[in-house]
Length: 465
Image (cartoon, rainbow, N blue to C red):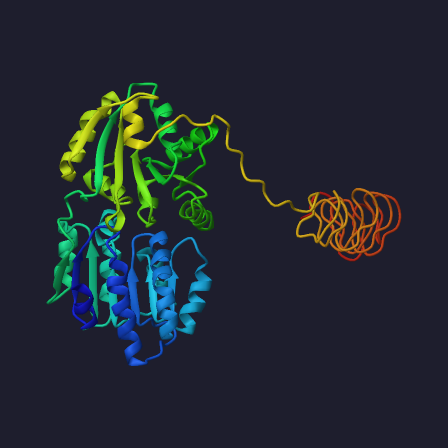
């Protein structure tokens, strides 16, 4: 059993599909061994390292281990791209027991000296085959080479391709191997279908599949643009769908995943890379909208469903010119697939996927939190072009008059500290054609002549917000 060997400090090679519980298989022994020594982490020197291919997977590993670590008095922190580098550096400086990182961001920390790996006692590589597919193995080798000699290493992968095997030979000496079964075979609780559709019917079929009731659906497209286009078309006919891809900021991706996990968003449209970090229970339907690049991507996509022994359905939408390539990919993946001709509203489509007609009522964007009216920038409040702390075209601290009047730090055509007159009057720091310290006259006045101010006014055309 992998946990027993991991607790004993042995090097472990695990062959396991997504959803098999391998995070706890390496995470719990790792935490137990760290807690048993009573050692505190030194600044910038984590005691254990978990390498993962994507930021989403990093956050999920942290979430899985955090509660156990807290009980043991240990810290678990992520280091991934798309989140503030400085915050991660501060956490590392304070000391981290378990660092969960992507190869790219960890490499940045190593180069800048904000992280040193010489004190790492235990290293775990999760989804090693995916890291190989994404081209991370050179970085992974460099990272492993900086960890302490004689430390424990664990590697988990769904497949053992040539690149992964070379990593095992180089870094996992005298390892023990554990497997949950043939990684090439389909999960027994998965049903695989090729849904053959006619030209011009694909979007309608997709909308009917997405409109099914109950469960979570994930759809795969090859590109970010494709994801957004599919999502827009689904929302236009009443489907609560959202897209997930690398073009979204990390906080956006986190919110999208949270809504998908909670069921508020029942349909997720994702690219292959973004979806590799998705480990969500209850996904019972996977849809290949675009054919995958190869049979490994087919299995990675399919692995989002039928997790931990649950049942799931995987369907590939095939236009006439795509049927041969999809049949070849499923054959290479070693899955037993059923090919079915379907059309919008057909009985076969409904029986396989639960498809039904969508409402046709477009999904509106969620209302955004209203900001104070007007362009006041960072202002506490203020009506259009008036008061507030730091208005845009207007005053700042205590603007009083209509339109472009006074305030603490007005921009463009506005006043300054307590300008009182109409439009382009004086103040502490006027912009463009405004006054100076306490100019009081109309338009282009101030402490000095021309279009300049008094104390620190600016010439026309040089104002800044």
